[in-house]
Image (cartoon, rainbow, N blue to C red; front, top):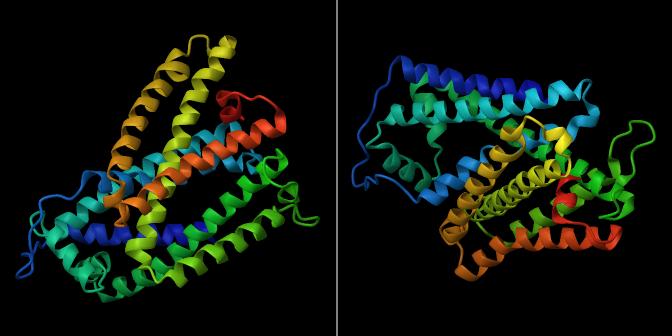
Length: 316
């Protein structure tokens, strides 16, 4: 179901892109709209990285793959390349559709009036039918994202329960289907509580809730990527027999990745108030949360298995 939805969603965007490339018709900025050359770089950087969230999920399904030694690396590299090209090309097409000098002001206009710039772009270039199809597929894509995240989190819970870091009942699998049903139901319960709290707060779903949660998620993922890169170096230092003749992959690339990711994390954290749009106190609390959870994970791991190094925990 997710596969069919994904193909249709990508297909309709490609139809819009093709129509724009075939006959671009830039328009002038709306009357009275302020033309902004650029916005905060940190916001663009965060959402660019957010677009790649989930590419690491290929490794989570290793136990369910027929030939994981081949298919997992191929799927991971393929995901990064497809996501990077698809988003970059689609963003370029939308900019070309409205004109580089007008697109920012037009985007602000649609946002202020509750419209959707991408849907309007599709309708303007590919016709009303494509616009309506895209609107339906927008809903299915949201469902697909939620379902994929749910599946991934359930499997994280399963492994953490199996490792005795989280309660052991999360490691239970269904007698008939062998699915992680205990972890899945736990994730459903947590989602209901969190969505209920967000609705009760009255916060704007798109601007406040999505921006803040995307910020927390991206900080957490970058932190995990940094720890993973360092763990790769530490692991192969302890196993030089496996790293012989592969210094680029086992040493230099992970170190370079760590340096770049630390720089990216710094830029995002320094501008986190702009990203969330909330007060400095609340934004600071949200930014610190992933670090607190990481520290809690190390403490729980040490409590269960005794003294464990950062590298040992991350490699596992």
